Image (cartoon, rainbow, N blue to C red; front, side):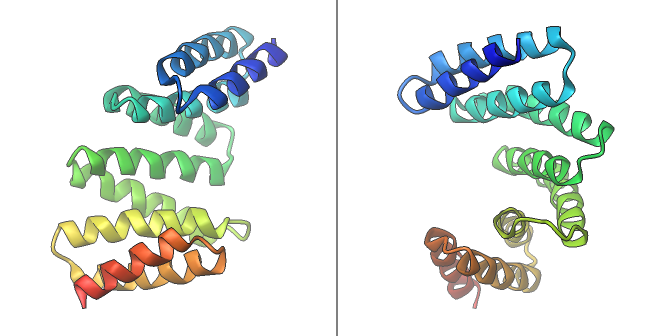
Amino acid sequence: MSQAIDNLLVLARHARFDDPDGARRDLVEAVALARKAEDPLQLAKTLTALGQIERDLHRMDEALRHYEEVADIYRSVDIPLKFAHAVRHAGDIHQDEGHLQLAEPCYVEALTIYRAHPETPPLDLANTLRGLALLKEAIGEPKESVALWQEARNLYASVNVEAGVQESERRLKHLG
């Protein structure tokens, strides 16, 4: 069953931009197979992919539900970096939907985990800082936003993500 799930994930990855509805169908099937297999890590992987497709299709309630389930799984099996990643995505969705009061605790929790973990990928930390910086800007806390953008900019530069560097610099110029 694991091979069938992996095949569906590959198909969905290839179809994501050209046929997102087809990718969604493949991922719904992969999630069903993972549930049947009672494999929590495989389920988390398939739900993460399905959550992304739901976001692509602007089905934010569904996407949020999937990321919250993923977070619950990674919390229960104690995989902190994957848990933080899922929580950050939930924060992004809340923020995209204008629910800033729900987004902030997600970012703070993810940021706390990332700062404490020695194996945190710099890009994951930068993306979390970015989300929190946008939120702080939106709620009228420019000083906090500037500090977050500066740190995100440095991290994006360290991993050669030019789009992140440019966005950070634009935001800093706007806030400065």
